[in-house]
Structure formats: structure tokens, C-alpha cells
Image 1 (tube, rainbow, N blue to C red):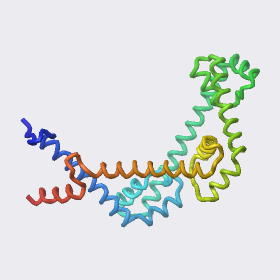
Image 2 (image 1 turned 90 degrees about the vertical axis):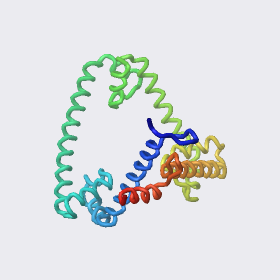
Image 3 (image 1 turned 60 degrees about the vertical axis):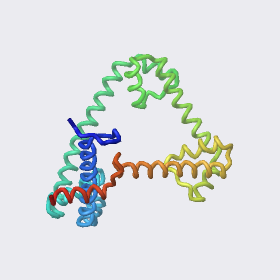
Image 4 (image 1 turned 90 degrees about the horizontal axis):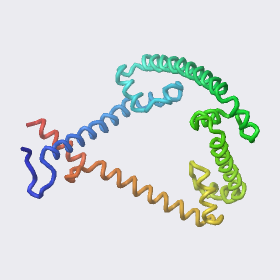
Length: 240
């Protein structure tokens, strides 16, 4: 029967497994740092030189360098083979998609004619996928496509309405990847730039707190043991 703590907490075996898991995480982190120090500059050059390298995670490229003992030419040859293979796969995939679209056009010829009369752009591939998804129900497709068109028109209207405020926010150093969010925030704040700045500041602060919370709890076990303490404990066990 597993030993239990006096305070009724988790078993000693669970505690050890958590410590071991944290040790493995700390080991992976140290391994990453070591590979980055040895091959970081070379990997950056490969990412700039070979397009297939840009789609791979950096840690995988670092492991490739380790696998080929730092031989850049072997890694370059491997990546070029991957690029050629992916090109062939993508070509087959494009051919399959074209064939599938032709099948759907034939299957829903009557519905496509009705959609054209309703002013729906049937040249858009998503129209075919909507017909297939809704089992050829023209009314549902018209409803969904109309709703999508209204959203685009609304967004374009907001962009035009708040063009000067958006330009001012960008000039003041406010950077948001999703530009639509700026337009929606301005609409919410009745176009007041200072209010939008405050809203974005609060959002970034909450995001930072959430990131800090996740980082802190990712490195601390339920028993309050940090990754560094676990690393030291594991070294002690090995000596024994």
C-alpha cells in the first residue's frame, strides 16, 4: 500500500513522479540551450537559405545538426530532399482538390444556378463546400453566405469610419496583429482613441499576468518543488 503524508496529501510515489517529470523538463531545457549554443548561428543561416527549413521548428533543425554531427552539407541535402518530397505531395493534393471541385460542380449544378440568380459568387470554392456541408440546401447556403458578406461590409465600413483613429493609434506605437480588433474597439469606445489605448493596456496587462501565472505554475510542482530543486535532488539520487 503506498505511503501517505501525515497531512492527507498525495502519496510519496506521486510526489516522486512529479519531481522526476520536472527533472526531465529541466533536462530538455538544458539540452535546448546546449544545441542553441553549438548550432544556433548555422541554423539561422539555413532558415534564411532553404524554404523548407522555415516550416520546421527550430528545435528540430538543431536536432538535425546534432544528428549529422554539425555537417552543414548533410543537413542541407536532407532539407532539400524534404522540400522535393513536399512539392510532389502538394502537387498531388492540388490535383485532388481540383478533381473534387469538378465533382461537386456536377453534383450541384442546379443549386449553383439558383445561387447565381440570388447574387452569390459561385466561383468561390467555399460555396461548393457549403453546398456539400448543407446537403445541397440552397436557402441555408444563401443565409450563410449573405451573413458572411454582411460581416465583410460591416468591417470595411468600420475601417473607413475610423481610418484616421487607426492611423493615429499606429503612429503612437499601438501594434495589434488583428487589425479588425482595433476597428471593433473604436466602435465600442465611440471613436475615442484614449479609451482604446486604455482598453488595450488593460488587455495586455491581463495577458502578461496570465503568462506569468502559467510560467510560475509550470515550474513548481504541487508539493512546492521547483525545477532547479528537482535537478539537484535527481543528481543526489544518482550519486547514491
